Image (cartoon, rainbow, N blue to C red):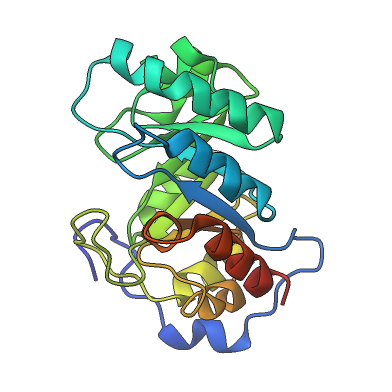
Length: 227
């Protein structure tokens, strides 16, 4: 049991009998930006989005002011809009509102989803990081979140890892709730299949795409998601 989840541990065998509801859309790809989106990153993003289906792109930069962040975001946002890919801002409700972004992704310390809903309106996509906690995920859903994110499922260098959920949490969530779940943390085309099988609605990926040939990586994820 984690300190964040008063529901206690979930039986890892929960996933053994899981079968995805046919009415639930297939799992999709959700790209997360590297921290450095300067230089030629816009061209890399365009290549990635042109290589296969991508549902959303999360703009994630740290330790710069909102004006500088907006200047970096705007060309990337146009690329996403041209390809009908949702543009999600990490952490900052204010920046998401300033940009007219499609949504915002909130960590546990980044604000309440109800606050984001009030600021961004009824059509915004609001996601909440829930680590390995079913309790936090249910709170997010009750607070008007559009998706919940669980992870990190695998070792990752993108951010410090404190929580390592079992894939069965994805099965439990998909069985109990209609709100989509996002699996995140060290996901590659090689280790992604168990998360898809367990019921993830989206795979959030960063290093596996931007750490090499982004177009080849998106194609490889596309092959996994196509079954």
